[in-house]
Length: 260
Image 1 (tube, helix red, strand yellow):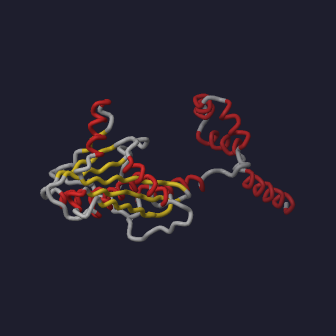
Image 2 (cartoon, rainbow, N blue to C red):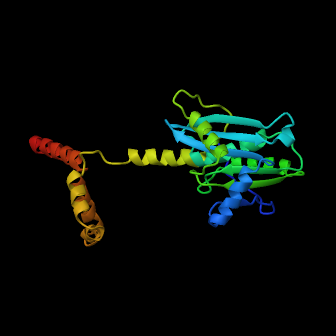
Image 3 (tube, helix red, strand yellow):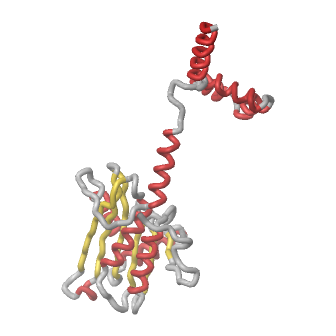
């Protein structure tokens, strides 16, 4: 499980600048032009959550000028685990870190990373991996992080999306070695505990109907005008939770009257 620190990055560390596609039509065209540039080292990432699995995928394209033997196209896909332990947002971060670490040692290049989940991303461990990889690649290179919408027509992005979906096929087995999302596990555990604390389906059915028919403020007024003891008795009568206690009290009373 990931370790949560007070901050993902130290205040003095230089943050990577991300380019969003919400900068107008002209700005979006320039972004797509950079993502399509054949002279740049390009990597696209994607994540998928289906069949109760979370997976990530990506594709890397290295230009001819770097590969020398022709353009190199590499794809990767990884099944991270179940939906209870991972989420698609941290999977996207894991894909970016994986893609950056997958790149060979290059010099004097522009490295473009294309992804499609600009918000709701957490996962300090993956963020730390991304910055460590960027720091290594910054030696003579320029790293650009671009967020494009999921419906983008870029071929490299479609290939990454297909790889991510393949990672969540029902027959796929999760790979070990990837940190589980702590927040996802905690939220799921809290939800399960809340379910356990709920009343039985048949208990308090009438009171739930009354509460749904009356606004909340009327329900509060009903209890506020009573003392704590009277409100407690009323709550027990309305929910039916005092039935067993009443039966036990009646049985004791009957036994006492018989003995007398």
